[in-house]
Image (cartoon, rainbow over the protein chains, first blue to last red):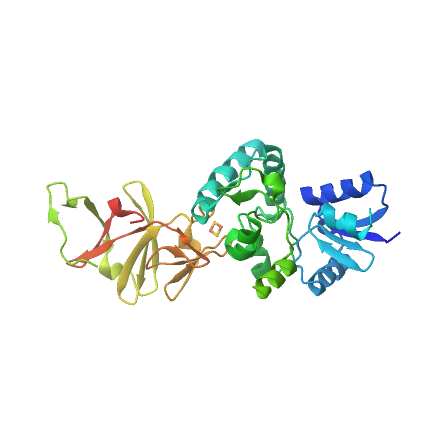
Length: 82
Length: 115
Length: 123
Ligand code: FES
């Protein structure tokens, strides 16, 4: 199973929907709320986002080596071969 | 100030801003209410109603472009999605906001360059 | 700017068809680059002097109504103090989306006095 790691915001409904998607499909995932993170974590997340051409738009979802920016259940399912 | 009242004020002010840009509030009332509530809380904490779905960096030039409505600073990208990133606003002719997808900036730029 | 667009009625308000010219300030009370917030007929107006010309716009930012008088003027561009939206004082246009405008008013100078047409907002 590919590992799922997410950067999210505690204020963002699409981040909540993404979490719900993985929960409903019984996919374990890790997430960090960027807005609640300490400065060092924030910096690391920012770098990661910018590297992937995302202007800090959330949710930022890593599935294995692939990145999906935004709430996109079809893409999540495809990458996880659901 | 009480949250409900401030939500109403923001809604009124922002309707006037987005109208000439060809946008309106989404018809998904639950989503709109949730997002406005986040904005009011963010405003209380940070001084401005920043977008609840995009990250602040602490650099003024970056962050000020994320104060709601941030459409003017992301016009082409949002026009391509017919919605703003968080979905608070949609193009005026959108009846069913559920069909509108978030398209990442990178994807948008790639598809633009292909044209 | 029109030169003598009005006639005087007995109330001190200068009239000309749909225009309503209200006395704003003496010309020599403002230096180049100055900003002056005024209350004209109940309207919050910001008067600016730039390169010898006078410009009048609403003092309320179209974004969230912050007072533009507290912003910074560079060339003909005023930047709102709250979230840095920038407007051209010659047209009222928001530089990042021209469809959004801060209402602006005509100005006119007569015998050392500056008048603002308060009927003309946004036109
Ligand atoms: S109130 Fe002027 S830029 Fe926001």
